[in-house]
Image (cartoon, rainbow, N blue to C red; front, side):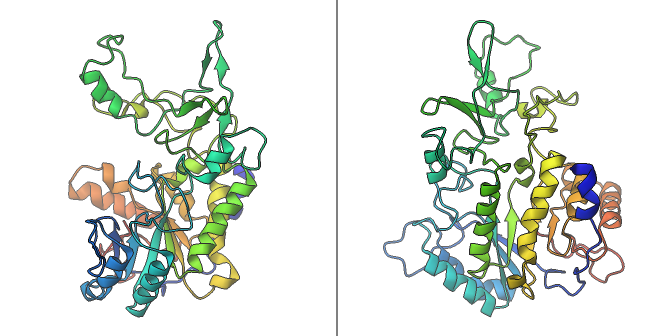
Length: 386
């Protein structure tokens, strides 16, 4: 599929425009829990609110902000700052209501400000009604909405996770080792990462979680899951949202055969996250699934009902530069990636210039970069999404 479909997926942008609103736009990220609490709320709760954002829109407009990007505001147990979502189509009650959101989006539009929201398609909270139903049995209509496995039995009859995939959030392992809580490890042993698999007693199987165990991964191989995610995007677009910052998107693309990850020879014990002992070839960004899913998601913004609104997606994908270039060519008129290339570079001008030159050289014609091309001649760092 990868080889046969990529030419189609990465064709030249027919509708990309150098006159898009997003070209040169200054995007301001808002974490709703800490940004501003509305003055009218009594008693004051000590955390931000959706109405609090509305109160500051005129001020943001005066600052020259063109787009507000709002971090997760959904109902959530808040294990991971709101990225563990319990309901994709509602507002956390401590932040406000859907009616408050509608007023905010309309007010922003009146100030000439577009609204972008965080969209988290890889995982939900383990308190989401889908997961509660999925774990309850192996034969209900949500049974295959997450990634379950019986595990592997060893020679002694003990059951283990089906592969060596690790949780991104494995840094606490280093702390445990420093506290002397891993006496079984020898001096030159590597600190083991946290498994990406947790055994669920209720269902009697392991479930996959690329992040915390409270964030089970959705099964994007299931067409019903993909349709639900696209319906969620339409729900927010129809409420006046203009775009999405898509969280950890490379994790939706996994090897369906769950092959072990190869070891990473560049891992440095005691400095790197133990998660980085493994390469990411099968557990994230797997080409045969990942790129078609990206195209399917991006296609929502090209549907006829959104024509003329100039909606956008910005993908958060921690991948190599060439993989990011491939994503940028899938649907360049509506979607692109964060330019993360500079994050790992030395703080020296020549390295930054080389990275920027390479970045702009490889962008498809008409694509809107994170670092915008101010005069359409030479790159000029005006603003960036993210």
